[in-house]
Structure formats: C-alpha cells, structure tokens
Image (cartoon, rainbow, N blue to C red; front, side, top):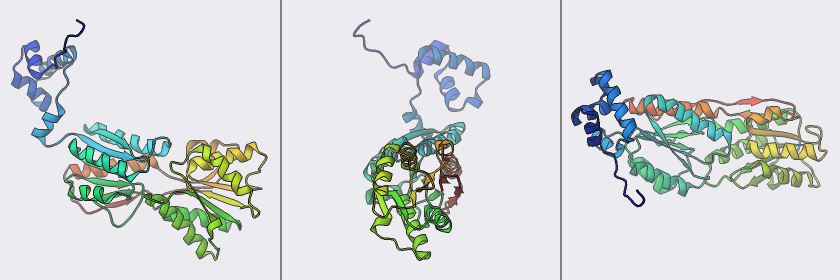
Length: 339
C-alpha cells in the first residue's frame, strides 16, 4: 500500500516462519557446522523468502570481528590499481572477508577520512597504497589494533607490514638501460612527488642513475604532470618537449597512461619512434605491447601485490606475529621496439 512503512525483517520473523526456535536459527547463522544440513536448508529457504539480512554490526559486537577489510587506492582509472584491488578481493573473499574500497585521488586527507571510516566501521584490517599519510592518519594507524599493510612501495620504516616493489630501483634500472643504449638527451616525465612516495622514489631513481653516469640533471631534464596521470595528457607533453630547441632523444614516463598518449600523438603526427624520439613507460598496461610500436616499459605486478597484501593480512588475522615484514614482489623491464 502506498505510504505504508516497511518493517525490517528480524531474526524472530525467520524463527516464526520456519517453525524453529530462535536459538536454532541464531546458531545456524553463527555456527552452521553445529546445525543439521536439512535444518540449515530450511532456515536458508525462509531467509530467502523473507529477505532477511543479518545485522553484521550486532554480530561484530559479539565476535569482535566485522569480516571487513578497508582498502584505499589512489585511483581506479588505471588498470594497475584495479588489478590490485581485485587481487585483494579475490584472495580475501574465499576466507569470508569483504572489501570496503575507498579512492583517495592522491589526496592524503581523503585517505585519512577513509581510515577514520574504516576504524569506525570496525574493519578487521586496513590496506593502504604507499607510505604518504597525514600526521593524523599515522596516529590513528599507530593506535589501531588491527593489521595495517602499506602497498606499492618498499621502505624500512613501516607501520606494520608492507608489500610492493622498489620504485627507486625500477626507475634507476630503466634510466641506466636508456643511457647504455646511447641516448644523450633523456628527459623524465613524472607525476607530482608531493604526498606521493612512489613518484618521489622514481624521480630520485632517475636522478641517481643519471648522476652516476656523469649526466647533468637540470630543470630541463625533469617535467612534472598533474596527478592523476591520463592518456590525454601524453600528447601535449611530448609535443612541448619536441618543440624545444634542444629536443630530447628519449623520454622516460614514470606512468604508463601519458606514455601511451605520447606514443599515439607521435604516430599521428609523423614523429618516428624510436628514430626521432624513444619513449619508455612505467606500468606495462595491456595496450602497451599492442601499440603499432610496442612500448618499452617497467612491468608492475599489480594483481600479485594485491594478493600478497591480502595474504599478509590474513596471516596477521590468524595470529601470526608482528615482525614488520616488507615483501618485495619485484619488477621487470619489458624491452620493446619504442627504444
């Protein structure tokens, strides 16, 4: 009837409709192994018919577990972070855990807000992207009594545990490869290092490799783009670099999407890759190998990072000791035709 207030279905309604005691119904939901299979089936049929949804908040007060894991990613536009989130989810769900996903847009304040929400909702564990947190967020995490996993980078000073790869080493290795190939005027294009430890480490890796090779690193050697990186930003970036009096002969993008955009702009405007300019990326998104000129890049295993972060979380929830473990899943250069 229009305007009629719908009443929430309760456990008592399930008990009455199934003809079973409230104790039996409650035990079937909390400890199904203690209830006969036929009885469980009858209860489940009644639940489906009535549309009953268990009160997880009330259950968590009793069990001290919510079976929810909070996860923060910077963006979902990049398939790398989508793969990471999926890796976490696929590893946790068979263990009865569900993911609460938040997107920070590379803003530490939004990450802090997500952390507060996770703790308020009694999340059993928290998985974060990187080590760049506000002071308030770090205080919250220091007091939080559940597992905390920082992902996508490796550092010695971790809150609890970490899973990722050495961003500094990855950028340095690609830079050394370009130097060894004979490129003289190498320009690095990267995202803002403010509140982004991964970008900061990659930039420093480029600088250190260039300096070690006796190459000068001046203001013209490093170009910064706004986060989040997009494929659309690659065209204007490469166009401005090629308009310089001293054109670079190689451009190393520290994110894959603008590298792809730069490649597509070159191919559409008669710029030969790598003859006129070499292009290297960072991430190895699926399109990179399929471009007319397949792109040299750093392969990152986003799904594996997610699975490893979930595995560390589960181990901690199952009582494994805290030893501030840092797991390095590694990286790999994918050398293709663009360099």
